[in-house]
Image 1 (cartoon, rainbow, N blue to C red):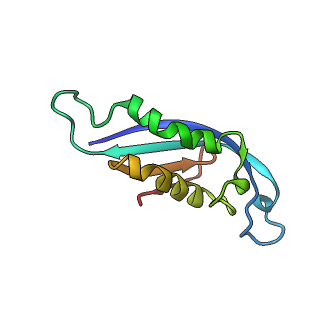
Image 2 (tube, rainbow, N blue to C red):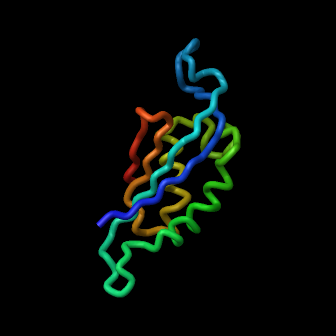
Length: 117
């Protein structure tokens, strides 16, 4: 079974790998939606795949590192595409969240990525 929580991150960025003149080459910002999915069996006593509070606690330091920041200044996010952001979040969370199965980033209501490690 899958369980997920969604979080918001408001951050600025400038994409460095796009062609000259591309709109994302300029500094801009997004309120990213981050969906973290944990997969596993339902625990027979708790009835949970994961306690949502545990997922929120695991994400708290990642949120602190990214929210209201200029993502290009975050080590490892020098070219902060949504793809790189999802992989960065996975790398930060996976050691302490072994059931993590997907990190989804939505940068607009219509565009996003899913990283599954």
